[in-house]
Length: 164
Image (cartoon, rainbow, N blue to C red):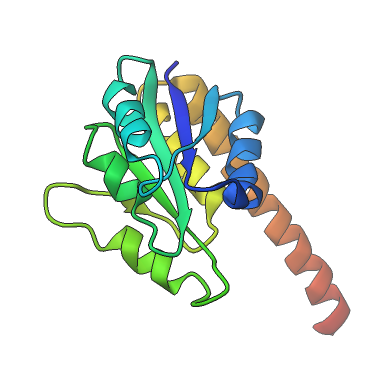
C-alpha cells in the first residue's frame, strides 16, 4: 500500500495535522509528517514533492495558514494528488488560507478541504488509496455505516425526548 505524506508549513499547524494523523492511524495507513515551508524552506519542500512518488507516497496532504502557498508549491513539483488543508489564523480566521489554497491556476490542481478540515483531508487521501485497495474500501464503507448508525441513534434519542 502507498503511504501518505503530510507536510505542514509550521509546527503551529500540528494541532490541526494531528486530526489527519489520527484518522490515518485508525485506518492503518502508513504516513510521514514533515515541516516544510513554501517560503522558509522552499528547496526542501520542492525536493520532498519531486521525490514523493519514488519514495512510496500515493498522495500528499499539505497544511498551512495565512498565505498558505504550501499545497500549491507541492502540487507544482509532483503529479501525485495534493490535498490542501487551510489552517485558521488569528487575523482572517482562515479565509486567507482557504483562498490561497483553493485558487490554483489551471494545470496545477489542489483538492481543498474546509478550514482546519484535517480529518476530511485524511479521509479523501484514504479514498484515493482505496481505488486500488479493497481492504481500505471496506474500512471506509464500515466507517460510513457506523457514522450513519450514530446519527440515527442520536435522532431516536432526541425524538423520544421532544417529539411526543
